[in-house]
Image (cartoon, rainbow, N blue to C red; front, side, top):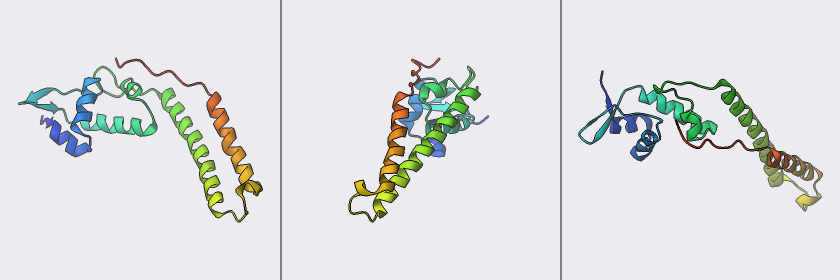
Length: 147
């Protein structure tokens, strides 16, 4: 089996060497050996790094992502956690859509003052209501460390 050195992994993924070394330090990926001073990785590390990137884009913390890999670094995905993250993204989409609509209206509103515009005031109420409900929602505590 041909192994990939750290430079090849970084070139293939766009991840900086320092980030890859950090991921190894916290247990998200593992090098298998060294060739001189250069870390060597199995080709499967590319798939792991894609999963890590997807998790980061979805808003998972590195600790949460670390919990999604089994002891042998194979994915052990928590379906309930993924469904919850999808619901969080749906909520975020609704909030951002309302905010976008408000900003577009502000840019195009013909009223002399936005505060005189009933549409603007209604959109403000929607955005403020979303902000209040978000403030009341309890935050999940972050996991202390990776396994």
